Image (tube, rainbow, N blue to C red; front, side, top):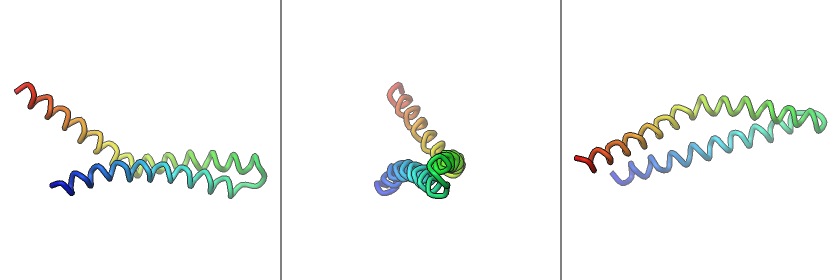
Amino acid sequence: MVLSRLAVTWLEWVIEIGMWLTLIGAFIGGFMAGEGFFGSLIGAIISTIVAGVFAALIFGGFVVLIDIQKTVKKIAAAKAGTG
């Protein structure tokens, strides 16, 4: 039981770090792909936006599930306190 709760806690951190690394990697990759400073900057911005949408689609479901779990825990704690 302890390990499963620890895995849920770690999952939240892994998702957060994964989303940030996706955005940073996309910015660096887009910057390297462009020609000249302004071309690189535009490439970095566009690739970061595309990666952000991609990360939201991939990781968003997990983020929503974690938020639902936290909300259910708060409701259960409030109900146990009043009952």
